Each structure stands twice: as structure tokens, then as C-alpha cells.
Image (cartoon, rainbow over all chains, first blue to last red; front, side, top):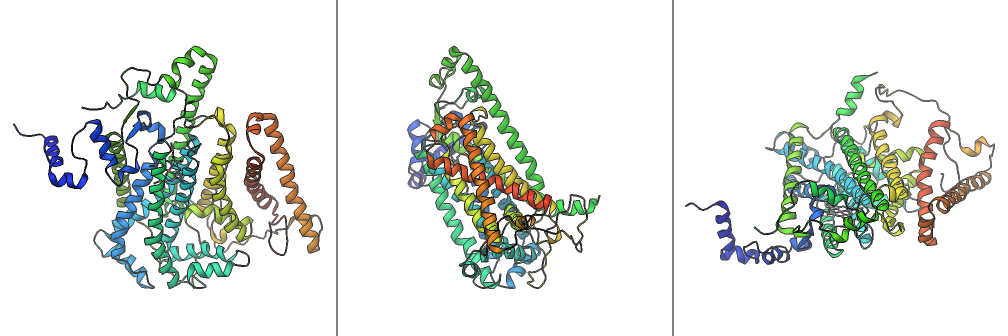
Length: 264
Length: 309
Ligand code: HEM
């Protein structure tokens, strides 16, 4: 009898090398399943168990997950884009043009990066709307909402700094409009404007500053806050479901698809 | 009706997502309303029927024996998240194959783009530049928005409606949030994208963008209408109008809470209440100021040497 794929996979997970990497080993016992989360540096941000009801679409509309998904796409497409891009004038524009016409799949890469950025901004707003509407920011989750607002700001700043990088007319004037606002601050305005752009107008220095912010500082900061965001969800007791929750949400899962069973 | 112009606006690569996302937002709002209505009906039933409240209350969860209240994150949650990530990747890939990102002429400081628009998510702030001084629209307002969002959990003292959708139990907070989100943010994005044309002038959808159009609108300041000419007079007059707005408005909010939302009022501390009052009145002031400008061509209400409002 040939082995099933599952069995091959189980064998693989039983090997010494696999176990040395993932520590938790194989098996679907409750213990092993808990260990799979606890023993993993990334996954341990999650709790080991989740309320069945919170798995349903109606609880979260999966918007937070989708936001994270777009963020990961942006990281994955952003790195190869960096290989082809010099943050200098006028090279930046030429590089973008090359991506469009010369680099193989460059056009696709750039499109994916740009549209994912649009999608992420939209999804963050939608996620915030959903969290508000479900009353999921109530105690003890207040501070996670504040972290969320910081993440919203990060997302907007990431998008804004990235907007300048193609160095075309659209980019140049959008950033000019935006950064001119900074000079309107009373007393300090001109200084802030200068600090932001590294000059009195959007120029090569501004491009370099935006590039460093966009490719280094903001993504790192965003990841840092996303980690806190997820960790707080676990620490605050999982996704919000309050004692006063009415039963319809349950009644819905009741009639709908069968709930996942534990174990085999 | 200039269909070409309309098509040009809607098919600009950066605008296509907006055209597509508006229905998606409408769908989410529909979903929210639907789920809230289902819960509200149930709450009504439970209030009317104590016996049912007993069996349907959360304490009895799970009310089918043998059901798991909790399952393991691995694999039950992670596989959903994985699937969601794959689905969004596929959608975005298809989108990237069908629509190309814009790339215009190289940046040229000597050739001004007209209209020069900020990225779409900042169009609300750019629209505010029409009605307010740049540092108010570009600095004070964003700061207030961020702080306002952050304080929401700390000023919302309603014990009902935590962790489930409802409209009945949270009418005030939900309508305030939707006012901010839909009227002050989404509507401004729509105006900025589809209506504002060259010179940031107002062009109805289907109207041709005329780059040479001049509008002779005489904008007046509110003090001018009252014949106040001295600088000191203008500053004092404006302070009275703006201060009066916050006083009268504050009184209105106070009496609304006292009469209609007595319970909410008694739960809030003075600090919580005044922060809420201030933020609410400031939000409401924006469309009022827009109306003054768009309908009566009034530019500023309060004029001082340092700032104009
Ligand atoms: C980069 C941006 C963000 C990412 C990747 C993210 C991700 C997530 C994820 C995956 C969840 C789990 C459940 C769900 O899908 O709803 C969540 C929950 C939550 N998010 Fe976010 N989020 C982001 C931004 C925000 C923003 C802007 C806010 C609000 C201002 C926010 C507030 C919250 C709160 C309060 C919860 C807990 C909800 C509950 O307990 O039911 N997040 N987030």
C-alpha cells in the first residue's frame, strides 16, 4: 500500500531535522497543538485556543487578517522592487520606467505593490470601522485600539512616503501639496518643512529621506506595533465576546455550517 | 453631459480603486446594519420573554451538548488566516494583471500639475484647505482626528454593546462615528476625487474640466457683513461667534444628554463629558463652515493677526 500524503507529511514532521527546527514535533493531540503555537516565536503571539464563534465570518469579517495579508504582500514585493531602484534624481524615474518596460515581470511587481498599498489603506479603515461597530474596543482592549490608531497612522505614512518614489509628476506634486502644509505651522513651520524634506522644496534630499522612511523605518515600526497588537489580543483575553452578548450570533452558527471538531 | 471627462476621471488608474471600493464599503455597511438588526430583534425578544432569556443566555453556551466552546488556534484559526491570505493575494494578482499603475512624465518643478491632488486618503484634508488656514486644516485637524480616535475607548462609558453588533443600544456613539467616517472622511474623498477639477474648482460629474474657467465669486468674511472694519473689532467679533457656537452647542449637547440619555450622562465624568462635547462640536463645525462657504461665500468667521477660522 502506498502511503498517503498525510502520512508522508507526518513522517517528515517526525524527523530529527524537522523537530530540531520546530521543537514541537508531530501529532494532533491537544498538547501538540498547543505546543505548535507556544513553541513558535511568531505564533506565540496568538493564544493557543480561540472561541469557536470567533472563527466565523460575522465576528471579524476577517478584516484584520486581510490587512496583515496585504502588508505581507507589500513586504514581499517591496524587496525585489528595491533591487531595481536608486533613490536619486533623475535615476529614480528611469528605474521606475525600466521596471515598467525592461525588467521582466517588473510591471507586475510594481502593480502588485501599488494596488496592495491601496487595498491595505482601505482594509485598515474597514477594520477600524468593524472593530468600532462591534464595540470591540471596550475595556480591557482600550489600549489595543490606541495601538490600532498608531497602526492606521503608520499605514498612511507608509503609503504617503511611497507615493513620492516613482518621481513622476503625480508623485512630485502630491508630495509638494502635502508637505507645504507643514510650512504653515506657526513659528516652527519652515523648520519642520526643511526637516521633512532636507531642503526648501521637494528635491533629491527629500527623495532620499522618504526612501529611508519608506523602506526601513516605517516598515520596522509597523512590524513592531503589529506584534504588540497581536500580543495584546492574546493578553486581553482573545477577541471580544462579552457576557451580555445576545445569542443570535450563536444561533447563526447553530443553523449554519458544522463547527470544527477537535481531534481526528 | 461630458461623458469623456467623466470616463477620464473614473478610469485614472489611481481612481479605479476608489470606484471599486465604494460599493465594497456600502456592502460592509449593509452587513453591519443587517447583523445589528438581527441582534436588536433578539434583544427585544429576550427583554420581553424572561424564560427565553434564561436558555439563550451566554451562560448556557454551548447550548448543544458536545459542542466545543473553544478550539485550537492551530490548525483551526491558522488555516482560515492562511486561506484569507491566499485569497487576497489572488485577487490582488488578478487586479495587477488587468490594471497598470500610473507613471506620468518625470517630476518637473517648473510645470505645475493642475489639479495637484494628494493621495486619495488625504483628500479630506486637502478639501479642508479650501475652508481653513493651512495649519488648521493640515496640522490641527489631523492631530485632533488622531487624538479623537484614540480617546474613543476612554470616553465611551456605555456598558452595553461590547463585542457584538447592535444599533439600539449604542445609537449615539454609532451615529457619531458614522458621521465622522462617512460624511467627514469618505464623502470628502469622493468630492476630492470626482468633483474637484483644475484650480480645485467645483465641477459636477459630467461637467467638462475647463482649465481657463474663472469664477468671480466674492468671498466675504463674516465681520464684513456686519460692517466691522477694525482689526480688533474683527478679532473680538470672531471670538464671540466661535465662543458662542461652543457655548450654545455645548448647552444643546448637555440638554440632549440630560433629557434623552440620562444614564449615559450619569456614567460620564466631567472630563469625559467635556472632551466628548468638544470633539463632537468641532466635528459638527466642519460641515457648518463648508456650508457658509459654499452657499453664502463666507470665507472666515474669526480673523486675527495670527490665525483665521
Ligand atoms: C496594520 C494594521 C492592522 C493590522 C495588521 C491589524 C490586525 C488585526 C487582527 C489580525 C486582529 C484580529 C481579529 C480581526 O481580524 O479583527 C485585530 C484585532 C483588533 N484590532 Fe487591528 N489591525 C490593524 C489596525 C487596527 C486599527 C487601525 C485599529 C483601530 C483603530 C485596530 C484595532 C483592533 C482592536 C481593538 C482589535 C481587537 C478586536 C477584538 O477584540 O475583537 N487595529 N487587528
